[in-house]
Structures are given as structure tokens and as C-alpha cells.
Image 1 (tube, one colour):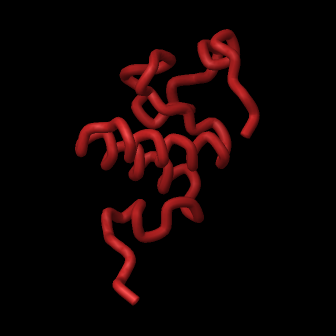
Image 2: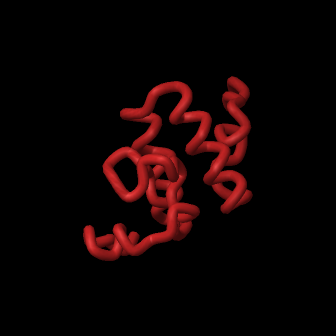
Image 3: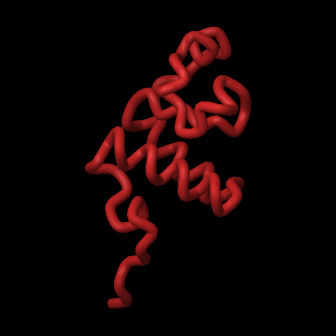
Length: 80
């Protein structure tokens, strides 16, 4: 994953964040590329509220349909 400097992050358009209302501040979860989108999913699962988790999953899935799979739809993987 390419590292975003604070200067680069500040220059990203709000549509490049999963929670644009917080952009570019902490907790806005940049999704400017697939690596950052995967990282946003991981971070929001650790630190986000249920509403933030749903919002990030929806945004990531909308921008990168191949990322997230069942988790993006709010479903759990079936037991083996």
C-alpha cells in the first residue's frame, strides 16, 4: 500500500473517502485505491461504530465491487 502523506491526503477529493463528512481528518477512511480500501475495511472493523462499519462497507463495495465479498453485504461466511 502506498503511504499517503498528510499533504497528499488533504488533496484527495471527498469522494475518495468512505466517510466524506469527516474527510480528510482521522476516521474518514481513504479509499483512493484498492489497498487503502482494504485497509479501511480492516480499520473500521477495529475502531468504527456499527453505522461507520456499514457506511465504509457500502462505499468500498460501490467503488470496488470485487473487494469485500459477503462482508460488504453484511453477511457472515457460512460455517464449514
